[in-house]
Structures are given as C-alpha cells and as structure tokens.
Image: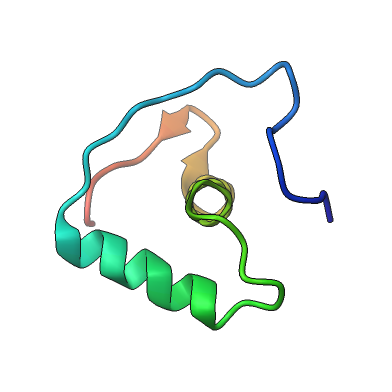
Length: 65
C-alpha cells in the first residue's frame, strides 16, 4: 500500500462539496481503518471499490436496478 502524501503525478485533483453527514461517515471509515488514512485516500478507495464493482462492459451503470 502506498504511503501518505500526494497521489501519483498522473492523477488530477477534483474538488467536491459533500454534506456533513457524508464527511462524518468518511471519518468513521477512517477511524476503523488501520493507519487512519486521509480523507482523500478513503474517498479514492471508496470510488475505486465502487467502480470495480459497478463497471459494465459498455459503461458504468448508475441505475438502482
């Protein structure tokens, strides 16, 4: 696993506003993860996990079905 700090140089920053409840949920995940990763790292892991579980051959499915 990579250490703390800036991600690879091939990454681009994305600014996102999140509701307070979402930030609190992210902080709970952080507290329950070994090494207490940064918020950006937790968000990267969540997005990567979601994409790996929800990517379809013809694109990403955002439907609840």
